[in-house]
Image 1 (cartoon, rainbow, N blue to C red):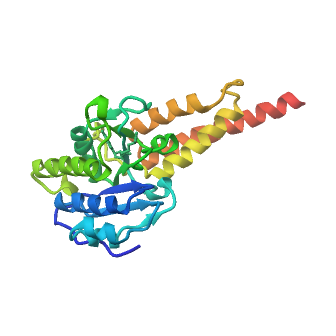
Image 2 (image 1 turned 90 degrees about the horizontal axis):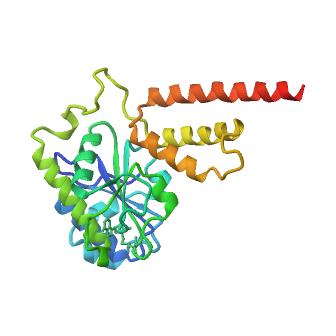
Image 3 (image 1 turned 90 degrees about the vertical axis):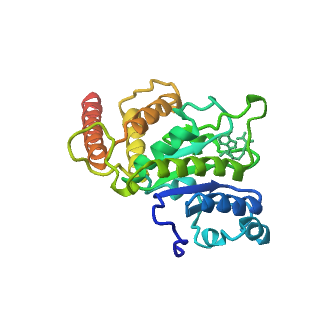
Length: 264
Ligand code: SAH
């Protein structure tokens, strides 16, 4: 990975992830929007065109963020280590995810950033994020724009979210890293499970549901979407993911034994 860009002292562990950006100029404008608000972690996922002169011109001095930006092939890869992933979408209420406004998103992002990396994800200029990409997100963020003309320029959307993160940071009297965890539990908890661990759990859950014939001929998509939403909302830590995977493993073992007995 490239060297980290220059960072302001209280910069929270919040990355801005741009997926499939079509105009290199927008990458520069997004970097500028971030840097003015004290954010430094830019991540690119499969940009249509590599950063170019337009990028540098629009960055207006924020090119250190672009030089340091990792480039990933997929969104799943870019957020694998994240404790919280929020997907920004111009389309209100069309997604089956909890929906936050930018202020709620910024507060939640800052809270989670004390426990692990957080990703704010932005889609393509023409088509936004696709359904599979949104499925990877814990919640959707919608800037409450005029429904008749709801889509902001990509970098403008990054500016709105970065500004709200800035306001949340300025409202927190201590560095975010020392902020108390706001999880309801009184017991000390392991850190939130990174995204890749949750994806491993979802893959096993999908297998187990097949093995116990949960879907009974229906397509698994709708049930899996609802289950993903439920478990993503729960804010599971790594120990809880291990526990759930243990339950699944026993369920799968029992299903296999039952299957064998039927064959006898
Ligand atoms: N036509 C696309 C708009 C893409 S705009 C669509 O229908 O989704 C590029 C990106 O900017 C979006 O993917 C989203 O991440 C962000 N964005 C634009 N307007 C937004 C809004 N009102 N709320 C949240 N994010 C927005």
